Every structure is written in structure tokens, then in C-alpha cells.
Amino acid sequence: MTSLDPALVVLDKDGVRLTVEDAVATVTLTNPAKRNAQSPALWRALTEAGRALPGSVRVVVLRGEGRSFSAGLDRQAFTPEGFDGEPSFLDMARGSDEDLDALIAEYQEAFTWWRRNDIVSIAAVQGHAIGAGFQLALACDLRVVAEDVQFAMRETSLGLVPDLTGTHPLVAAVGYARALEICATGRFVHAEEAERVGLANLVVPGGELDAAVRDLAAALLAAPRDAVVETKTLLRGAAGRTYEEQRAAERAAQARRLRDLAGLSD
Image 1 (tube, one colour):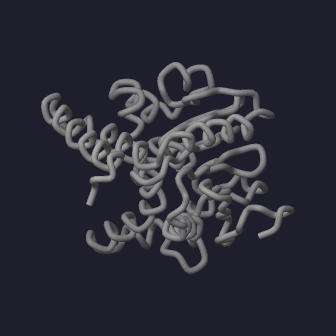
Image 2: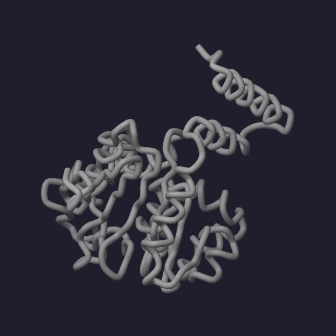
């Protein structure tokens, strides 16, 4: 690396580029001509990006080139032939229950690693984030969105369901009733509503999106890494614990932090 090119390119394939600069990694969707439409090849590249993250990375930024974050699944998926070298929807439906389940699980891997406890992920979202694009934004811990953002979950209009891990974070963010209404109607959620209902942490003008994400990443890096990891672990597990269980988890986490700060950890 040189001062003129400080970001190390770790991966660049199938519409996904991973770069790393110090403790911040950036995953960029790189097919703006197709509004960063998604495919199985892109999902495998996203999975590979997660596995390729250096241990020094603390914050991962996800962004899309061009006017849209991601307009969802590439329409080629809905043709009889599907993608070259990939099973079509018809082929998938004809497979055994076990094969179909395994294939969808493989696709889901692209959406699961963003919530790892050792990183904080930020989606920088502009323009369309539809279907798989919406679910990819939901896969991240935090979302900073441009004023022109348009979220929509269109799967039900196609006779399908959101199956790329988006239903859990959507319900967690907006509640069951609103999540059902958003998914069942397929309507657009714009920036003001996204911020009001908890889908967006921050709304900024489009020209300020990158700067706002950089500022947020810097703020996240200001605290000691282990304290952020412990806090994220506590918060992620809170919904599955009772009040008393969460109290106990807090005590155990704080004990680990105190011992570490005192130089008494194992």
C-alpha cells in the first residue's frame, strides 16, 4: 500500500469488492448498470468477503455504487433458464426438500456474517433497496440512508417470501404488525418513515452519505474494541433472555471487563 492508495483490495469479483484500510473494511456492490442487482454468484462473493476479513477489522461498511444500493434479485432469476451454471427456480422446486433447504441456506450465508460480535457493520443506503437489497441492508447492525432511499420488500407480490434473513431484523426494528404490512403490501418505505420507525439510524442528503458513514465509523472506533464487542454481545442476546438472565449476563460481562482492565484476565 502507498499513501496514494491506502485501501488494500482484498477481493474483487462477481460484483463485490472488499477493501481494507486499517480497522475499517468496505464492501462495495460494483454493478451500477444493473442497480447492483443480486445473483447467486454475488452472494457467494459476499460470503467470501466475510471469510476474508482480517482480524484487525472492527467496522465493516457496506455500500453500492451508482444511484441505487441494490434493486434486489436480478430479473434473470425469474426466466426459465435462470443464471448460467445455476439451478433455475424451477430446478430448485424439483429438488428434494434437503437439497432445496441446503441451497437456500448457502444463499443465506451472504447475509449472516454482518452481525458477528467482533465487528460493527454499517449499511450506507441510497436509492432503491428492494427485496434482497432491503434484506442486505437489514443484515447490517446500523443503517445510514440518503434522503432518496426507497426500501421495499416485494417477494410476496411474486408469490415468494423474504428468505434471505431479513424477517428477523425487520420485526426487531419495526415490530410484527408494521413488518407484516410492509412485507404483505410491498410498499415503499421512504427516508422519513425509515428513521421514524427504526429502520434508519440517520438520514442525510445523498451528497453527505459517505462522510456521515465515515464519521460514524470513527465514533465506533473511539471506544476500546473489547468493550464494544461485549456490549454488542449483550444487546444481541437481550431479546432472548429474561430480565434476570440479562442482569446476570451484564454482571458476567462487566466482571470480564474489570479483570481485563486490571490485567487479571486469563
